[in-house]
Structures are given as structure tokens and as C-alpha cells.
Image (cartoon, rainbow, N blue to C red; front, top):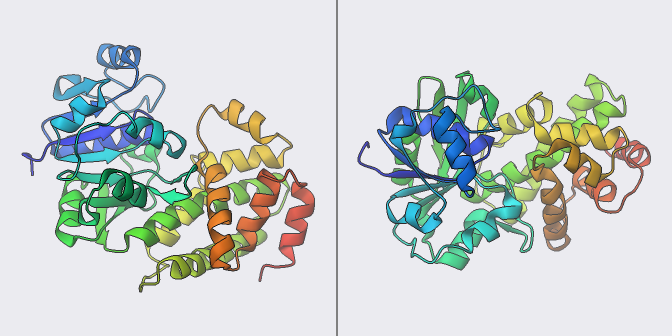
Length: 330
């Protein structure tokens, strides 16, 4: 496994957490970071400037580059950890073939311009075989990885052997991995759980209590099951950690930026003001529109998604919309 050359594409907190995990098992990694000044600060301080100050790195074991093609050329496995609104711009720089690479998407969102999950986008635009595309799902906040708190990941790939290889690369004493072949189901669930985390945060700010939150999230997992079955009808255990576990941690954790975003909107912030205040991407904002528009074709019952769309994109009153939502949940 140490001969497998692994690269990280992206520089945020999740990319940093994944790099920390990978470096437990690999002697060296390659790492694409967009700005040279960020690389220089990283090398000087041994940590990523602005992200996960608890995570320290031996930078002698890292090949940094601002040239994504340089990183791709010398890697076998590419872990894509770029926020979904920036995936297209990042990948537009690629002019090398990636057909023989294993691409692992750690993006918990969709391509906003295309309403496309990341694996479909990579397959269609870069001609990467589906057997070479994998996803990372499950309850695993970057901040807890930095603290080496026990976490769980699910690796989804159509090729089980490749999923198991990625699982070994990402397994540490504090990260346990399982594998799945439900790539699309895991990916859609990873998108939708961020929408429900926004809803949970928003409802907390509107002073709905724990009783309502439990009903909200139990309905949320039912929405995910209905949508994933309609979009990609294969058998799956929606109560597994890659689905339900991810929903729970994203909806309830203090580390959840989507929950924080929802709290701010519930307190009266505009979407733009909340985004500027956080200075981080809340993937669920973009996911809300993508899932809502995809569902115009599928016509699945998604009252929570519809409510968040009305609040975030139609500027309707959170108080009124959530009050109406309470009448639809059981």
C-alpha cells in the first residue's frame, strides 16, 4: 500500500483532515493547494494556515504544488476535497488524462451549474470509468480528526477491491472504515444531510426544542430514503452510519457549518450576510437548490427540502414556513 501514490486536491479543513489520515499510512503524499503564499506559510509553520490548528504535519513528507497537473501526473489516487461551488473551476485546469487514476470524491455537495453529483460530473467530463470513481461518506468532522477522536468512514465504489484499497489508505487507530457499492446513494445522502442540518440549526434559532428536532431528523432520513430510491433504486440500509450517522452528526454537532448557517438564517441574517459572517462554504445552501430542481422530475415528497428552498431561495419567512412544515411532519 505504501507504493500507492496518494494526492490531496484542496486546502480547506476537510482536505487537511484527510491529509492527516493518509499520512498515517503513506510515507509521502502530494498536495495541490491553489495559492503559493498558503504553501509557504504551511511549510514555515508545519500546519495549514487558517485550518485545523491542532493538526501538525511533517512537511518534508509532502510535495506541495500550485500546479494541479503536476500533482495528478505523480499520483495514483486523487482525493478531491474542494467545496462543490469551486469543483468546476478547479478541474477546468486539468489537461492530463485521469482515466487510469482512482478519483475519490470527498465533496459533500453537487455541481451547482449542472445539478450533478461529483462522480457523474467526473465520469461525463473526464471520461473516468465508474469503477475508478469512489466517494467518502459517514459521520466524520474534520475537527474531530484533528483531535484524533474515533470516527467512521464509508467508502463507496462500484469496484469493491478499489473500495477496500481506499479503506486501507484511510484506516487509522482513530478512523474505522467500511465499504459499499452504493456510490450514488451515499453521494445523494451526503448532499441532502447538509440541507437537514441547515433546517436543524434554523429551527433551533426559532426556539423549537429537542422534541421537534427529533421529529425533524426522523422525517429527514425518510426523505433521503425516498429520494435515493427514486434516483437510484438499489437495496441499501438507510440506517447505516454512511447515511443516518452522517445526518445525525451534521444536524447536531457544534462543528457543523451547515447547522451554524441555519442558526444564523433563523436569527434573521440574510443568506448573503450569513455566508460572509461564516467565511466558509455551507454546502447545504447549494444542495437545496440542486435537490429541489432534480425533484421537479422525480416528484418525491420532500417537505423539509421544499421548506428550506422557500426560505433560502424565495426569501419567505422562516417563522411562517417552519410553522407550516410542522403540520406536514409526523
